[in-house]
Length: 441
Image (tube, rainbow, N blue to C red; front, side):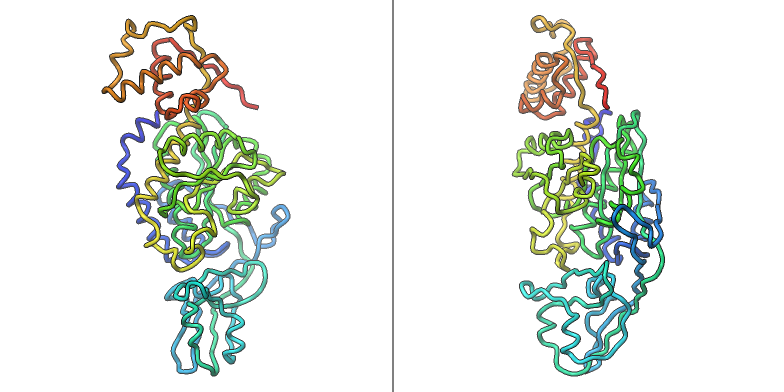
């Protein structure tokens, strides 16, 4: 797949705006690990890419977990002693403790405060809190507002339902020439959080749409599932299939202005780890490469020891490492179209390496073959490009000994992978290199 030519034709400004618009469309929906907000999110993603929906009934055993009851929320609010409504779910869905049990009662302020969640360090922000696996109820509100609540009797209304239902996830599978798979995973369970949730979702969907338009060597599988329980459910249903996964990435927090960050897979030096490290090192920007830790996003599920899949995590800010994390400040103003576009472009660079890397053998290994009489130099571009291209040709010829891949050579040369790929394509066209089939286990 000539992803280089494809990338050259992308209008990145338009791509960034398109992803931002998709995030804005999804932002108001009240998502959770189950329920109609999650389903509606997947339905809208499915308007842009082919998405197969799976429903797993409540009570189903998935590895060491069990699918919980389905949560439905219709409304929630607090009525103050003066009759004013506070913490209204319909004004911001973070106001209700996610997965709150139904509640309708009157109580004094002292009792209500035991069910209020605030952020003293950011007095005007609403925190995001959940109660997935134990029956509880609560409200989230700005600390400044909570501290000024007068004494008296309050009415609490949470019009919700916990019932037998199902957990929902979506998959987009783009078949390739070989059955080996690239897994791209994004969590879709957070309500109205733009960076930690929607940025990864919209970048994944845009990447799927772009790859759908290209011929592919690998099969690409995009999984849109609620965090933790969704990935575990997917693994439980695909335990016999995961051996097909050769490379993978979890996507999250890709819309803010922080430097790009890649967290290695549990294997530490899997091919996807090498590819991501190479792309980030060639970006000319400050970037971070982190070792695997068994916390964070769903890379810890895919990388649990019984699966140990080669799945890293690509992000900008790390979870919990930016003040806006899991608060109302992680809103549409916090993410930027240009950051989304830059994240997508970086992902395509990584995918290009996964798709196009290969091992070659120099067919004229004794001395440098004469490139001029073959007309190779005439195909090269302007001065700077020509110098880079000529250097890439020499590196490709010298290290294509049947033992070094293009990524190996690019890393040794300190050059972008795309330059080595273009050199190899040109040399192969002139029968100076031959590609060696690589057998995978």
